[in-house]
Image (tube, rainbow, N blue to C red; front, side, top):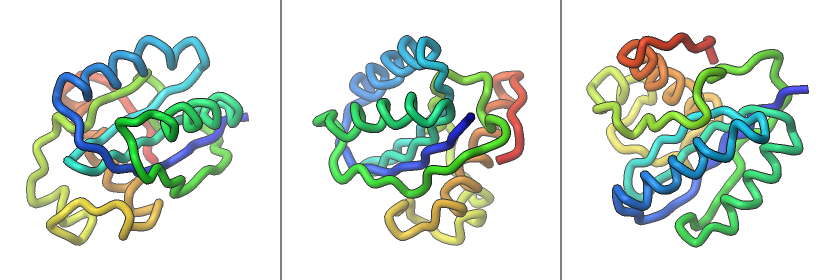
Length: 143
């Protein structure tokens, strides 16, 4: 059974540290059957992980213990019928330049995930993933 976990946390990481987080995710996630996307806009992380409930639960425990993250908070965890991000071991959505349309989708001008619902975070992330997929030549499922 597939599950999706959405969480947010805080951290002040350099581009090198963010690259290390992404590299570790991309190396380790395929082995546990996890896929997902990460968005970082200092100081906020938002990540969507998809895979078996046990795999993503173990990943979240590691993330919550990582000193680069503070205040790791699960926004939503639920069973899903299909992955929204099946082709990415871990996509970096932070590379998307946030234009007016992205901010309009979440109804704000600053990214503060702790004040957002899981549904609005997922819609925001899905919109960014669609932009990245188009640039990357990949397909994603609708979130």
